[in-house]
Image (tube, rainbow, N blue to C red; front, side, top):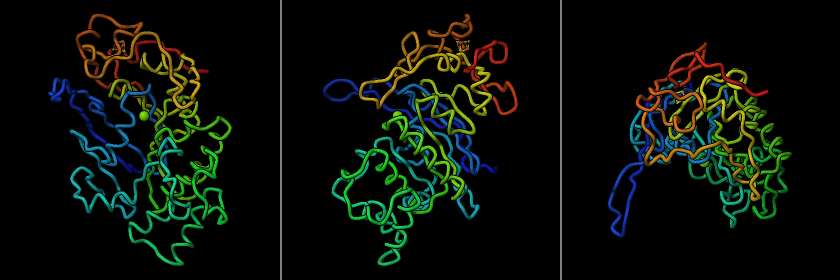
Amino acid sequence: GETLLRVEGLTKYFPVRKGFFGRTVGQVKAVDDVSLTVRQGETFGLVGESGCGKSTLGRCILRAIEPTGGTIRFRERGGTEVDVRALDKQGLRSVRREMQLVFQDPYSSLNPRMTVAEIVGEPLVCHGVARGSELRRRVISLIEMVGLSARHLERYPHAFSGGQRQRIGIARALATDPGFLICDEAVSALDVSVQAQILNLLRELQERLALSYLFISHDLGVIRHISDRVGVMYVGKLVETAGTEALFARPHHPYTEALLSSKPIPDPRRKAERIVLSGEVANPANPPSGCYFHPRCPYARDICKTAAPPMKQVADNHYAACHFAGELNLRGAL
Ligand code: SF4
Ligand code: MG
């Protein structure tokens, strides 16, 4: 498909403050020179350990967080390309009808004092899309599209299961008829069987509504199931991108190999199933020199300690930021 979203050199630095007066003592490069594209109709999966900057990247694309640098170009339904970073408030409001965020936690992202009708209808009212009986008709059609029904409309979020709440969150995200959804850990808080239902729903909706997704998750199984292409993030940087099959069968970055070989350890709270690798995750406020992965990398050589590796093309549509990309024989997943 055509390119829908083109992100180039995106950065987000947060100041590190210290002491009672909050003196700035440094910067965290939460997103560090990331470039990626999302094509029309595809799912681009963004994977990495928690804290690697993937949520910050997602929010920067929507300018829910202001990026520090880089460009974001988005093609609207009409075909007009928009420079998202240059938009004023009004322009941003209009582009946000077409780019929506689906959050991780359907328990905290739905207002407990609003009915389902109010939650799903709010964006329509806010953007002046519909009111009165037309509003009701649109809300019912949205709620049915996600597998709920009109009899749920007057209920409050607490009356629903986690999966149903995520359906309500998706209905709300779809209210303004967006073409692009950023799903941030959208199924991570759910039981595995419910996860599969929500992933299938997202796929059906993608077909039906010609949606494109940026799907952010720490869960490799989920990413593999839903994505057409995958980007792997490590300490604010994109270290590998490839088609899903290629990435899982034949990774070209040692960090990706390590991710694929590690078993996620279920957290008792289940929200954050952390991937466990040996060695410490680099501190983004004080990252290592050279390649950020070198203290944990079994293939590291001298150059890795001093020079940051550039992104190299290793195959069609396959890129890895490693000095030895293409030369290492790395193990994929089964
Ligand atoms: Fe490992 Fe060096 Fe490649 Fe970094 S550049 S991933 S340290 S081999
Ligand atoms: Mg996150």
